[in-house]
Image 1 (cartoon, helix red, strand yellow):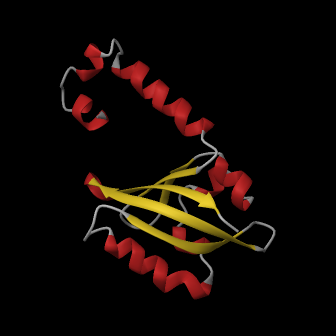
Image 2 (cartoon, rainbow, N blue to C red; image 1 turned 90 degrees about the vertical axis):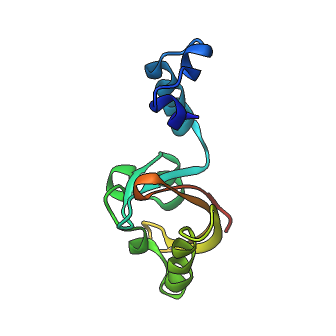
Length: 130
């Protein structure tokens, strides 16, 4: 829907919201989520993560942004993570699990649900499962 609004349709007007109000609402959901929310660029770098990432893997969100998502992946999970990322070009959704290194050194198992969108961006909702 945001893509529709951004292209000039009046859906936001029909809801009684300005684009600024809509973006503000989406920002609130982004920050309030207990799920880990991220946006990654085509080169595999996190562009943005919400605060839930800090709780899950111990690294401040500001330190995660700009790093490659493979920088945190357990060596045994690298190939399946790459395969899942590649599958996004062939399907709308990738669901997989991998292990990420916590700031204190232990491994955290994450469950991912990702989708690619125009402009080479990947959006993901991620949960700690172990």
